[in-house]
Each structure stands twice: as structure tokens, then as C-alpha cells.
Image (cartoon, rainbow, N blue to C red):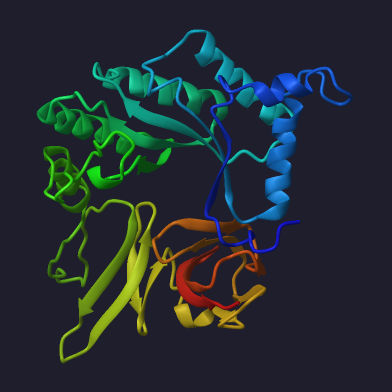
Length: 336
């Protein structure tokens, strides 16, 4: 056991580049309990799950998107190793695809083909990791490619994250980070990133309800701050987690997603703040409970209460409680 690990890491890159870095596999092959040597990989996942049960556990490699491979020996080897992990019961949460893009960029159609293939084959979450481009790539091409690449990744049903391999030239292995020059001036690709994330994919809407007191809009999934001016100085401010098509009604001083008349005050959390276990009381059967951190990321999901929250880092969280009569969002504070 390693004290201090649990609850401090959001995601672990448990296995990195095992398709080509195979020294451990070959060293163990043929020894008792290790006929191929790769049995150690599933054991490593199991050990990490024991050490940090609340963290996501991932495998990460470069031989697909970063290398422009949609098939071939290394591509098939990665799929084989992932299948072996799953067959051995390894608690694999997701697959990382390194995004070191060369001077002749991987076709966006090939990016989609890779994501489609792994999603169909394994049904696991995907994440682009280590994104950057070749230092010799023209700035205009780098910006255009980033736009198309991020659009593909953002729209794909399997992906839940995009990690750059640095963002500033002053701290990058090739002195060529995607977003900022050495003097912190914004690169064309940096402007593309800002335009997509904070403009095109950012929802900032307002409107007036109709005669029936209803107003609707479209929005990207995520965490929203909603302000409702009810007139006569009565202003409601609440936070919601948009995960699907939702209808909210004003219930007291909260917004409640509901299919029937479920009132937020009918559901309570205790203790709050909490450190080990969070209990939920509801007059209706609970069908699912999801916990989101302050960044809107799903960190815990259960089919019922109580919730084991000991592994969560201290901070403020939102609980999405679904019942047979609708859904309520409640906040709680996790203490040490």
C-alpha cells in the first residue's frame, strides 16, 4: 500500500506504449504464472484499482492516430493487448490515443476510423493525449488541422477528453507547442482553439418565457449557471448539469428536472459536509445517482444510495439524483 495516493489522482496512465516497449513482458515470459509475460499488465490494473478505487485507469499508446495507422501489425497488437486485459478482468476505464501529428498529418477520416474501430471493439471511453504537431508544419496548416481534428474528436461519441502535450513553446519538448509562442503571443492554432472552445462550443443564451411560462434553448453538454428573473426582484440562481434533453421547473429556490411534480425539498443529503458516506432520502425509488466535481466531470456513479465518497478529493460536488418521479440536483461538500 502507498499512503497518499488514494483520492489525489483523477486518472492513471497505467500502461504506456506497451506495444513497442516490451522489456518487462519479455523478462517475465515463461516464468511461473506468466506464460506470455503480459499477465503482469492485468495485475497492474488490479493493483491500481486497489490503491486508488476512485481514479480512472487507462492504457495509452502512439501507434494509431499519431502514426497514421488504421491497421497493420502494431495496430493489431494494441487491440490484442487490450482484449487480453479485458479477458483477464482488468478494470480498464479508457484508451488514450497519443496525438503527436507529423509533418504529413493523419487524415481526419482515418482519425474517425480509428475511434470508430476501438469504440466498436471495446466500448471504452477514448481520449486524445499528447497532442502537438511537427515543428516544421506551417502555422496555417497547424491551425486548420487542429480545427478539423478537434471537431472530429469533440463530435465522436466515445471521446471524453483532449490533452495537449504542452501549450507554450517555453515548456515544450520541441519548442513548438500548439497554442503560444515563446513570448506568449497567440499562434493561429491557439486562436482556433479559443474560437472553438470558448465561442462555437460555448453556450451563452438568454430569453423571455412565453405566455405559459416556458422558454427553451439548445446547449452543449456540461455545467451551467442559470439565472431566472421572476420579476418583483425575485431572482433565482442555480447550477445545472446538462447531460441530455432536459426540462427544468422552478421549485422553491432550485431548478428541478422533472417528469412529474418532484420537489427538490423532498430529497435530502446527509451528512453535509460529509467525509466517508453520503446518504440520500427520497420519497420515491432512486434509479441512479451521479456525482460531478466542480469542473462538471463525472466522478462517481451508483444505482442507489448511500454513496461511498471517501476516495473523492475534498471540495464541492453536485449530485444528480434520478427517481421514478424525476431528477434533482443537490450540492454537497466533501471533507477530509
